[in-house]
Amino acid sequence: MVRISTGSPNPTEGMQAEQNIITVKSFSPQRSPQAEIAPRLPFAIANGTRILGAGHDLSWQTAPLSPAADTMFGPRGACLFGLEGPLWVADTGHHRLLGWRSLPIADAQPADWVIGQPDFVSEGQNAKGEPNARTVAVPTGICTYREGMVVADAWNHRVLIWHQIPKDSNAPADIVLGQADFRQNLPNRGNEATANTLHWPYGVMFHDGRLYVADTGNRRVLIWDRLPERNGQPADGVLGQAGFSTRNENGGGTPTASSMRWPHSLAIWQGNLVLADAGNNRLMLWDGLPQTHNQPCLAVLGQANFQAVELNRGEYFPTDRSLNMPYGVAAAGDWLLAADTANSRLVGWQQKGALVVKDLHDRQADGLFGQDTYRQKGENRSYGSALRDSLCWPYGIQFCEGLAIVADSGNNRVIISEFKI
Image 1: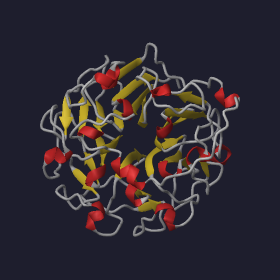
Image 2: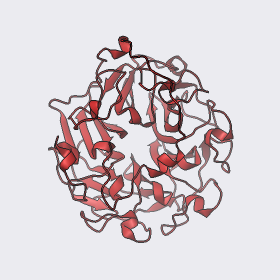
Image 3: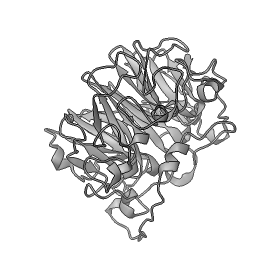
Image 4: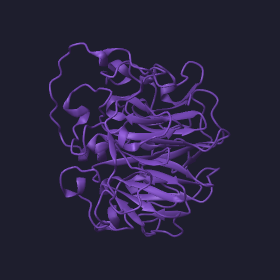
């Protein structure tokens, strides 16, 4: 289970408020090929892994979750900006960003910098004060853009942009999106959704000059055709809604190829946009990059069709074709990986040769990490202690030059591992 420290807000509270109770079908425990040991994703755990945070110690359950330079509480995102560093982590539950000036070389290596708190031992939303350019409240997604950094500051209902990657503690952000200025933090600015407002934005991605934001609480993805240059700049495009002024889950109707319930993170796989739509328990894949408002995707993974949305397809145990609240997605070379969060695993699809998106629809996974078989879903495989190759509610994943960076949120740690592409 996710450990909650006294005095720290639960970073999953907003997500849980949105989830409906779903009745699952009964599962017959007859043995099947799904119960056999699954192909393992190509992580080099034995000799190519570093673990940051409390989970580096396999007796981590007794470790304190109070803030320090070497602890984390429910981290949801991480971004390595190159093999020389720096590394920045969204330490979500402590309401801060932790920075390492270079790629960590050892387990439990303490951070060099902090943004969002006056020091390494303080916590609280907006440093227990009012929001400004140096504070955060439940930071989640984090990505690079050119020479800068973008962070989804979810509970301040905004996105922060630094023109240069921060290389010191409490460097102020340069641009804020979703709010008129750095002092405001109401969802949708206290009104209805528009092209310049946000509500619980959890995911960010910059690709080919465009900025994509998973505006989760508004059940949409906002797209800026170029990097914003001023505070509160409105988006140019929207996916998941017919226009900028609506925010109903699944567009107010039944699920379709264009609707969303809980969009959370984005990736580009061989030139094609991929979205983790956690609330509909699926990944959405577009053929190339969307060019029009509310453009439907061409394929989904995790469901048999565009109308199906049940977690694990209505069964208690997962399979190699099902997902349960996938919050993270990332691509590297032939591989597309999903952080299948509520199943406490990573699943991957490998496509060698030309990728034809429509042929990927409902395809079975090609590899697994965090569980031994596709039928397992227990936290740390058997609801026990964390292992170096186990997971507990992983939320985010990123690739950087042969390394995979996994935000293993329920184990209060970040795993950095070699990944053989």
